[in-house]
Length: 117
Image 1 (cartoon, rainbow, N blue to C red):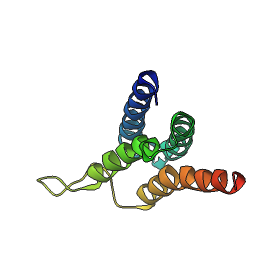
Image 2: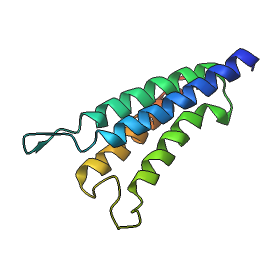
Image 3: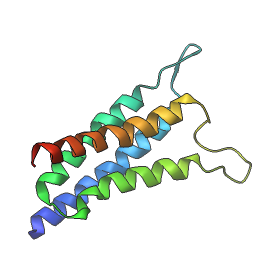
Image 4: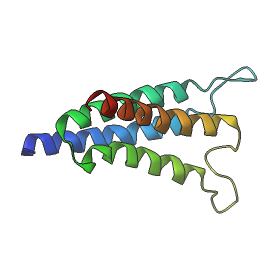
């Protein structure tokens, strides 16, 4: 891996952190009284694109760095604070965020490995 590839992997890791922050902050988006968790789809597609580009850069475990940062930010947002309230509410939107944000890139990576056999 060249120095430019390492810098690009660092930028992709920062992008994973930004995707994590945006998906956590806007998960509770409501239109009227109807929840609209559009960030679930954006997190899945964004993580898929970032992981795909990171996989093009390296075949080592470092390609999962953006996903690890995204997962850490999402999990920290789920932890209750001092007053007992977390940034995320405990309902179906959080489960969908975790399933789409991690599941979609994981399925894509496993399908990519099967195609390369």
